[in-house]
Structures are given as C-alpha cells and as structure tokens.
Image 1 (cartoon, rainbow, N blue to C red):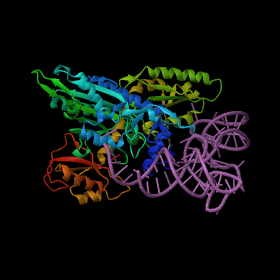
Image 2: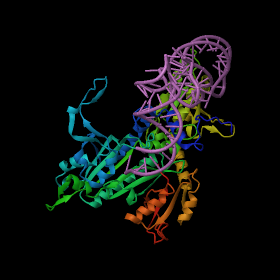
Image 3: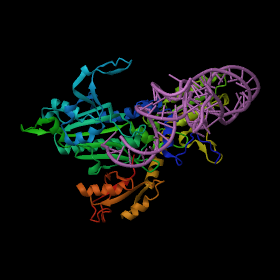
Image 4: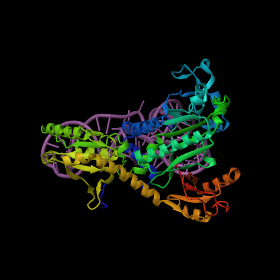
Length: 514
RNA sequence: CGGGGAGUGGCGCAGCCUGGUAGCGCAUCUGUUUUGGGAACAGAGGGUCGCAGGUUCGAAUCCUGUCUCCCCGACCA
C-alpha cells in the first residue's frame, strides 16, 4: 500500500496550497502570464470552462434570459451614481486615461500627454452601471418587463492577493442582469438564478453546495439581499461558488430605470444580478483533485474517455491504430449524461504507459489502453480515474473488459463516475459540518489547532445588525472565520445566540474561506 | 498595500556567504538492447542565471532600482 507512487510530488495533506498549484501545472490547465494577477488559461483548463459555459448557458437560456454584450469600458460618471457600489469597488479599479502612446525618446513608449481622455474610463469590475443605462433606454412600459439579460465577459478587479482561478485580477464570468416590475418578481428571479447555480454546481460540476443568504456585512455593494452557494474544499475551507443579488430599486434610481404601469403611473424597476466565474474551476480542483492530479467530472470533461494505443514503432501499429479508431467511433456514437460521448484517440507517438500519466494528472474520467494482444482478445484495458489504484497491491487498477461490453456500458460508466465524485464530495462535506457548538469557548476550542481545518460549524444567532454585527465579525475574525450564509430551509432556531446570548432567530454557517 | 521567502535550460533544484564567463535530477532528442503495464544503458541538444543600472580587469555571485511568483496579514463580488 505504501508502494503507491503518486503522479504528483506534493500530497494534499502535506501542503494543500502547494498541491493546488501543482495540480494546475501538472494538469496543464493554466500558467503565469507575467502580468500581475493574470493567467493564461491553457487548452485543458479552457476546455473545462467551455463545458461549464455550455451547460450554464443552456440553463440560462432555458429560463428565457437572452445574451447580450456590453462594453468593457465604463465611463467613470456611470460608476459614481450608486454610493455603496462606488465604495465597494473604487479600491480595485483599473482606469484608462489615455488613448495613444508616443516615444519617450529612449526607445520606450509612454502615454501621450496630448491624448489624455476627457473623462477616464474604468475597466468593468462588473456591469450593473452600464447595463443599467441600457435598461433605462430599453424599458418604457410594464409591457417591457421583465427584461432578462445575461452576458459572458471578462472583468477586472485589482486584487491585492491573487491565486490562480480562485482570485485573479482578470477573470471570465457570466453576469445576469434583470429588471422587474416589482420586488416580488425580482426576488423570484434572484431565487431562480440561485437554484440554477445550485443545480449546475451539483449536477454538472458534482460540487455539493449550500444555498443561502449572505449576512449584511457580506452583501454585494448596492444590493438589498445577496444569496450565495457555498462549497466545501478538501481542506475544510469554504468557497463562494456563485452569487445572486436582489438589488431593490437602488440601481434603478441611480440609472433611471423606470416604467409606466398599467394605470399610467411611473414606477422604478426592481433589478437583480447574478454571476458565476472561472473560480468554479478552482472549486472543482479543490473538491475533486487527489494526489495524482485533477479528476474532472464527466459532464464537464472536454474528453470523457481517452484511448491510448500501445504503439511499438513497428508496422503493426497501423493495424492497432485502425482498430482504436473503430473503438473511438463506436464510443462516440454512444451517449452519456444526455450528450454524445466525448472520446479522444491519443495518437501521439510515445509509450502508452507514459501518456497514461498525462491523462491521469489531467483527470480524464476514463483511460483505455489497447495493445495488440488486447486487440486479438477483443478486450480493452480500462482505468477509471475515480479509482485508479488497486489498494491491495499498489498498482494501477486496470479492468480488462470485453470491447463490446465496455462500449455498451460506457454511458452508464460515465454517469456512475459523475455520481461517485458527487457522493464522495457530499459525504465529506456532510461529515465536516458540525452542529451544536453553542458558546464562543467551544468555538475557540474547535478551531484551536491552526494547522488543521475542522470544517464548518452551524450555529444559532440573533442576527445583529450595524455595530453589533461588526463586533460579531471581529470576534470571528480572531479565529480567521467568516459567516458564509444562512442556509435556505434550515431548521428554525431554538436556543440562545452564540454571540450575544439573546434569543437566536436563525442558523448560520461559519467557516474559514477562500 | 505591510511583513517574510523566492526568481538559474520544459519541470524541480545546487552554486551566491568567501566574484574567475553554469552544474545536478527528471523531461527531450539519437542509438542500442528491451518491453503487457510509469524500461535500461550510452551519447547529444537546450540557459543573455527575471529585467535595468552600478561596483570591478572580470558579476549568477556584491550594491541599487524594478517586475513577477509564493506564504502570512490587511482587503475582498
């Protein structure tokens, strides 16, 4: 058992942060760009994003939301209209001030002082303001509502501390923006988006999440309510994996998003916004990765099955390749999880055994190796990425399966792997949410060992606001803890508030977080 | 943005203190022998030592500045 030779140098339990970075490079997902906080997303990483995009986009469109595209540059004045929004983002904004470069006389280039912009443009950190402008133009009457839009875009936030996929200065995301006639309809959309995120995270990414409302101090700048889905990483930390905001009429007032109701009166719209980003990929890594690299859930795997012919640089290779191509075509004709199976025949020269570890590190759900003897026997050597080791002998757990049998079961196998990854993650999460911590002393003891993350706790609180809430936040901060959310549909409170001792009104999740 | 650490062939590192124009492992390429489960041996290719200045006869090594990355903190949709 100790004979297992893992594909990565760093184990999760030894150094989780270093392990995370090693997965990204070993799986060839992304690399440094030389520009602070910005990364190059390589084909395997981007392929996973494209899958997430596709599946999410289908869900968005199914809800009647239409895609648009708005400018990356936002006039500064737009931004100044909503006070809380300005304050929330001002500190992390990239600003464009010039539109031309000139020679500095020393072989370099500098912004041309003659080409200074009258009004600086900010690079969007999010698009509420500029989309609000458009909505104000597009909406006249109650008949124009609800207005449901979404855009896929990049945004920039000048982060102080960055981590690949989890927090980068530039990232890719989707931002939904909707306008409604009243609060009820807008709130319903807020919850619809949240539920859409929960379903996508759990069904597509195999990330078990807890949907709930963020406390006041964690709200999006300018929002009336902020809801999130929270996922637990393998080190016990929480990752906010998606957010959905009810913005009330704050942005409608700022941008003048008004409509005439059926009685001729003028009303302000109620708006929402919601988004998920490439951060989800970080969540997939930290949820499903293991000491051999990434494990990609089949639904979001660019290639679900990879075929590796055992080439020997002999003339017979041609026959073997032709055979593998037949297998590939047969598999591609199958369907799994409601789509055609995505299968790759890796014809690159080189030994199958070497290439195998490339795909293990990348996390392809199923790897098949085919040699001439397998071909003669009509079998395939099948390796499941969710169970690559034979724990009894420390060797790779190949299953030699008759070709037809494997092809016929391919769809079911991928569905099973998808389910196994989700179940593993859900069990781990459920086992690491502790209830019953009822005093600050207990809480302190629970998180006393700084070297380990004992997971999350669910506690009861009286939902203090303002300064009282700030005090609670400070107390938690001493233990590096944050309030994640108030889970939807949790049990009613039935005891004292852990912070104030007053009667609790609801239950909250507390955790260390990314 | 504060404190700490680091940038040397694709990857991981040594060399730096005590300046004398680069080395190891893995990977790559070639050859030979092998080969049904991450092959062995031999040989070869590949580096303006992050970048820019400075000190010096001479700088990976010393000094200054700067960029990027990692860890901790602050901040954070």
